[in-house]
Amino acid sequence: MPFIPFSEMPAHSRLWIYQTDRLLNEVEIQQVTTQIQQFVNQWTSHQNALRASGELLHGYFLILAVDEQSAGASGCSIDKSVAFVQSLEKQLAVDFFNRWNFIFAKNNQLHLADKATFADLYQNAEIDANTLVFNNLIAKKADLETNWQVPIAKSWHARFV
Image (cartoon, rainbow, N blue to C red; front, side, top):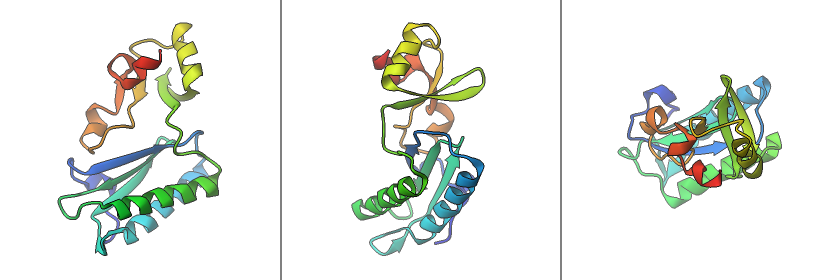
C-alpha cells in the first residue's frame, strides 16, 4: 500500500513517537522524510500491507502511524519499525530511544534537557508547572491535538520536578 500523507490518517490511528537527542538539520530532515516514506511503502504485517504513514515533526520527533482498522500492527511489524528507527540512529548518530530526554517549549522555542537538567530548570524557576512538554506516550493520532503538548503539571514529567 503506498504511503498515505500523515494529515489523511484517521484520528484513531495508532502512533509510535520517537524523539531524537538533538535537533536534526535541514539535510537530515529531508533524508529522514524520504526514508520514512520508503519504509512505510513496504511496511507489512503478516504479509499484508499496512495503511500507514510517518512524519518528522519539529526536527525532533519521528512519528509512525497505522490505521489498525485496516490491518493491525503485529509484533513482527512493530519489530520492523524499531529496526528502521535503529538504522536511522546509526546513520544520523542520534538516540531515538532515550526516554530521559525531555523537550519543552520556552520563549516560543523548543529546548531539550536530560532528566537532571530538567529538574534543575524547574527548581531554579526557569520553567514552571505551566511550561509545555511533549508527552510521547500518547497512542492515537487524535491525541496529537489535545494530549501531546501539555503543561508539566498535567504530564508524567511532573514526577521528575
